[in-house]
Image (cartoon, rainbow, N blue to C red):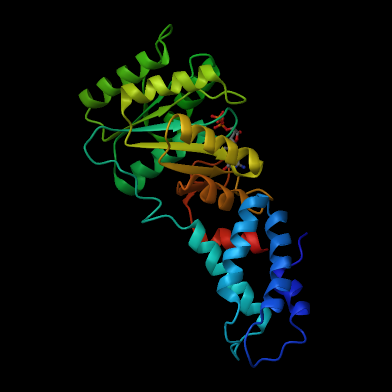
Length: 297
Ligand code: GDP
């Protein structure tokens, strides 16, 4: 569907010999193509602009190496710069879950994949790290969502907090905490309620839960296909709740993943995992190289 960036750039650099250095004009021309590629990949305009500027300063004057074409060289410079922005500090998959029972707060909008991701992550922690995990749904307005988590729990062999009718999210969070301590769990995951859009009531509710649970990790789950909306959601949740990382779902879809770059550049928060399907195993730690390659097409 998209034209490969290397192909696009080869035309730009046709006249450049393989000796000498990348001139400012050549780099500028090439980066115009890169900018189009970024925008097509759903990177926001201001982020694309800042990124291009940084790369331009870096690329201009670089000696043209003999082993690759100037076009390939610019693609490599751009690729490395993308990885630089996308990469967080340390291992994205290493969650702070020492001092049991460690609370993990899962937040996000309805339909973003929060409940599915809660279960996927619980399975991962159980299988890869041998953790005993307790999951609790706080979505009191949507009994179906609470049941969904219970069903997934049975499916993956992870306990869920029994559903008690009439409790509010804070009461459920407190019960989860007590149950996790009494039951000898390593981790308890709180799957908070989602709404179709950000509203005051939702934020107040999540904040109250956060204050009770004092989570070690607060992971925002967002649909990676929603581009700028995902970035706005992340900004909002981070400002109001304070997040420690992002999970981008639906990265198995057609999207080019530009939201990842904007998200990182705008919020500064690391992307920890990506969802790659509906199955319980379809969760992987975030790999900047892979997304960078995908953004460049
Ligand atoms: P919630 O409302 O945020 O809890 O969203 P759900 O966890 O119920 O997910 C909504 C739908 O998205 C479900 O049908 C999930 O199976 C699906 N889903 C979640 N994550 C992914 C993903 O990474 N890829 C795909 N293709 N579907 C996903």
